[in-house]
Amino acid sequence: MNQLGPTTGDQLASAPARALVVLRGVEKRFATGTLALRGVDLTIETGDFVSLLGPSGCGKSTLLRIIAGLIAPSAGTLDWPRAEHDAAGVAHPRLGFVFQEPTLMPWTTAAKNVALPLRLEGVARSERLDRATAALRQVGLAGFEQAYPRALSGGMKMRVSIARALVTRPDILLLDEPFAALDEITRFRLNNDLLAIWQETGVTVVFVTHSVFESVYLSRRIAVMAARPGRITREIAIEAPYPRDEAFRTSAEYAALCRTVSASLEEAIAA
Image (cartoon, rainbow, N blue to C red; front, top):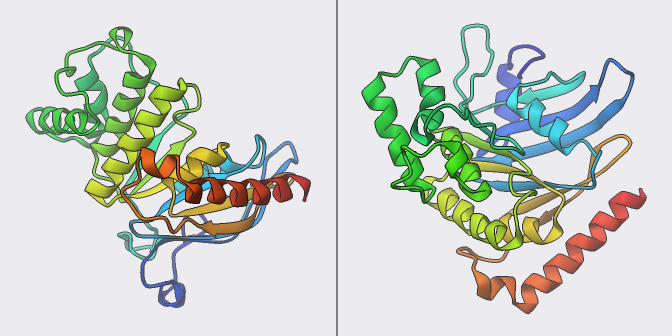
């Protein structure tokens, strides 16, 4: 269990064999009295790609921040069966978080922006710069190590942000609508690059989006959310094989899946 106390042996034993994080009955009520989430049950398996899909205000970002440990749930449990636990039974998973905005330090280079989490961990300078260079190469920015944010496009800044999340070699990568502000061509390209990184590294991904089309293209599973209060109304498996490319994006299978997910989203909005 995370935030609400140590995980018990029974809880660990009852988790699915490949479960990386298990949420049971998670609720979040803010100090204002607003009930943002209620009764959220979700299991994320190791190596999974799960999208949280729903309208604005349904609690997608709040749920992501609870998984990240940035805010605590008001009720329910959050268990990490496969993560390292300390002597008190508290889980310490390795997390990478990508926010809606790149949030880069404008006064330093791309490489040093990426290396910041390693610097905070006390990693030696030579190692952290080597790992930052490798992470930038992984997101398609080889040769831009010494570039400052002001010299980068919006898509390139987001690549730097993703590299910074990957440089710590996380167990789980959490992305909060990272491509929402980008143009369609850049967004499609970054969707493809994110899938390539996921397949190459095997990292577990939880991706927040309000786009049906993006969620279907990327995901193995989509958790459809309704608002007031936020809750998961349906989980949809996307069984189309990987790798996915433009042929899939223009296929009848993709169109049919988008219709199914869109109908579920409409039901959630009306719920």
